[in-house]
Length: 295
Image (tube, rainbow, N blue to C red; front, side):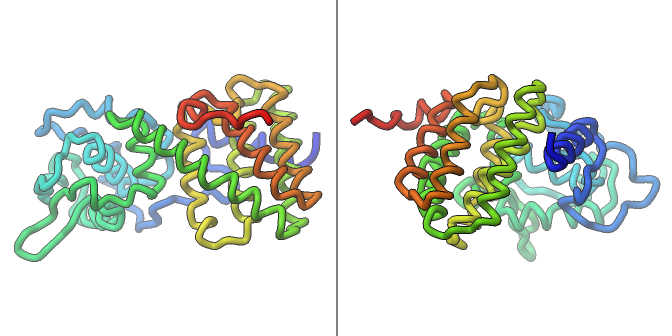
C-alpha cells in the first residue's frame, strides 16, 4: 500500500471515531464559550419539534462548539419547516431554551443570516426567510435538506446538477494538461482500489470525494471550481457513496481509471463520456438522466 493510501485510511478512521483528523478545522471558528456553557445544547421545549428526529447526523456537529451546534439545530429546524417562513426568532428565548449565552445566539444567527435562512432588521427583529431567499448551494443547507422532508427533491436536484457540471469539468480538464492534478487523481484511484479490497467504505468515499473535487479544479474554470462544494455535498448526503463504495465493484473503479487515462491522453470527448458512464453507475443519478445511447 502506498504511503498516501495509508495516510488517508488512518485519517478516515480517526474522523469516523469522532476525533479530529490532521488539518481538520472548526467550520465556525468563534471564541470558546464559557465553561458553564460547554454542556450539550438543550432541545427547544417550547416548539412542537422532536429534535432527535431533526438531528439525524451527530457527526455534523463534531468539533463545532456551541455556536456550530446551535447553527446546526436551528438550521435543521428552519429547513425542515418546523420554524416556518416569517417566524420571529427572539434571541432571549433561544438562549433560554438552549441554555446558551446571548453571544452564542447572536453569532449563530449571523451564520444563519449569511446562509439566507434568516434576516435581522431594526424594529423588526430576526425572522425566518422564505425558501426563495436561501443559499441553496451552501453545503450545510444541502445537508439539512437531504436529511429532512425535502430529501427526495434535494437528491434529485443534486443529481441533475452533477450531470451538468462534472462531464463538462472532465472535458475541460483534458485540455489543460495539469500533470500534477492528474497524478493526484491517479493516486485517488489507487487509494479507492486499496480501500475496496479491504472493505473500507469510509476511505473509499473520502478518496472519491477528493477525486471529484480535483477534477473540477483541473477544469481551469473558476466558476466551476466555486461549485465544487455541491459535488462534495452530493457525495456525502446521497445515502451512500455515489460511485458505489457501498457496493464495491470493478465497474466504478474502471470508470475512474478511464477518466484519468483520457485526461493524460488529452482526450476531451473520452473524459466526458467516461464521467457520464461513472455517474449512471448510481441508481439515484440513473433515475435523473438516461444512460448514454450506444451508437
